[in-house]
Length: 160
Image: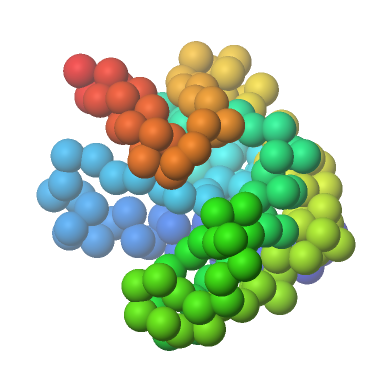
């Protein structure tokens, strides 16, 4: 836990510093993606930033596991595919590059990441719900554009 705590302190310090840069200070707002990841980080963030809203994408873990473990990525251009839509193809439709499965997209690693999420990040849902700033979105729809539109809609409401 001590290593995690020190890692959290470093992460918080980096975010705190970054929020002081002119491009952030002069902007209408900013979006933090993947931060905070645990209660310590959230509590520290509250000390130096006002958070207007937190987007929570709700998705069934079984569906998420399927999506991640079925993901294939182009070795040349980075285009992302899912095995369910490839019809057996092994090359990228965009550039012809070979498709591969990322090392961290295997069932064991994905399950481990989801367990870490449950232990460390999921408590943030309650934390931000109690503050009245949680913005829930359903992440079960496909394609990604539908999810994008949902997230954009809740952020547009937030901005009035």
